[in-house]
Length: 276
Ligand SMILES: *[C@@H]1O[C@H](CO)[C@@H](O)[C@H](O)[C@H]1NC(C)=O
Ligand SMILES: *[C@@H]1O[C@H](CO)[C@@H](O)[C@H](O)[C@H]1NC(C)=O
Image (spheres, protein in one colour):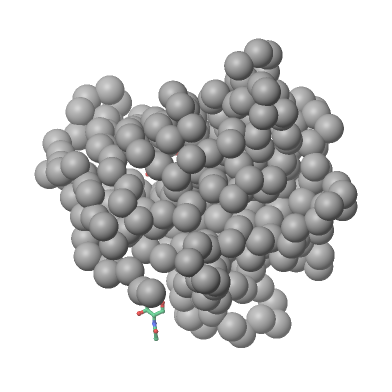
């Protein structure tokens, strides 16, 4: 199934059956001043939705699933820290600078894309709530599109088309869950004072057991994008709160994409993913 890429406007409560029944509201501010709803625009796109096997999509295509902490993946590069289901994640947080992306030498397939995000689940649990930025090179011109986006997998992804993103911009992501199916995503460009807040009332249930800080080689529809070359992505202030106690990056599983990307924990709140 292909989603209809109709533009959606944040002013309305968005409820589109075709988009896996996600309902959410959006508010935005610039330097603390509300941005009029008429100037807020989100556009759904097909992102990270891979082969629709059977009646429900399987998350296994998002990365290579392994039984042990061997940290190789075909599309995730970064930290995943796990908490037991008896002590669920409540909030996840991270800041990073949007990287400068360039065509990968010797690679002539497009798009080339790298998505930088903070999220909950998707590793040991199938649903995934994530928000971040992406750089995308559509063709050999090497022109880079930089965008902010969020997704509650397996529902559709949304580009926040009215939020400009530039290399080196600092972004802060906070995802606060109020239940397994309700959350508030706050995405800010710290440098320019733009903040977008999405309130989602009825997402696909999370387990809230994986805390993720990841640079992803994304799928667009059925196709795994090529991976561009990008400047180092440092996740700073990377922490999560749980029902009891916090969770950082210390000891987190480090996913690597062999030959393309590696990552390393720096200390409890810092991780770097770099292009190979
Ligand atoms: C190449 O990609 C850029 C950015 O998406 C786009 O503006 C341009 O039209 C594309 N050019 C061709 C020849 O497809
Ligand atoms: C973010 O801040 C930078 C300044 O570092 C600015 O150039 C850029 O336009 C801002 N982007 C957004 C999305 O506000």
